[in-house]
Image (cartoon, rainbow, N blue to C red; front, side):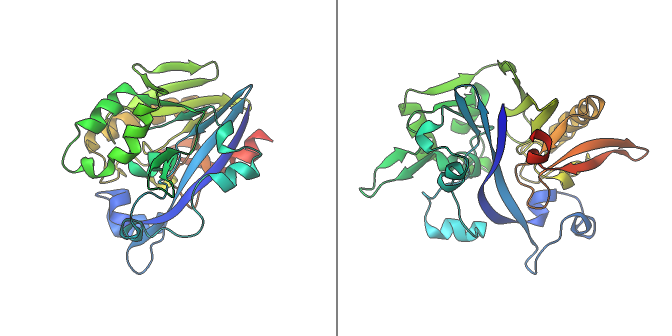
Length: 280
């Protein structure tokens, strides 16, 4: 099995959104902000190559929105997956599976685009799409605050493709990949646990989006049920430290991955890592 991290987008987010009720005087020590209270964010996807499967976990926000939308995201630099995939020796047509942790725009928008005729088309024409059934249903009937993260032109093409697969229950997905379901950030978020390179790597998605979100109360304000997020995180961090899992962060611009450590103050970030260090 080969693992390659791929940065689909670099953008910015308000620090208060990223860290919820945690005071700025605390979170700025862990994650510096700019003059507008914004912190750097990345969307770090993961390519898993195993046998004849080329699996992408999440695909970034894509380019379908109007420029005003991206100006609110403060996106910078190159975006999209085609160039990074080419560097990994793969074309979009070679991707066999796309696993969406959830269907918010910054995770699913990059699966489709508008062509020169103004028609929407799939970027990965041969890929099977995977999502939890709970998240798919929730995307159609969420709430007034979260509904702004779900776009019809992201989701309808997936359904019409005939290659959408809905996962009902957590458990083993592939021989070396287990899927867990967490509901605090959004209903039915899938978190993959990947056995590779002699360890277990957790693609933490928006469950624990950055290393600074490891402390129990540091929950983003966008989570639909922050108290549930706290309970889910507390239980999982104990499991992770007991089993020496490595957390891979999807949205941390500063830190790619880390182990955990148990201290008198609780479970904290331990050794910082990069996936290519672990798997080479």
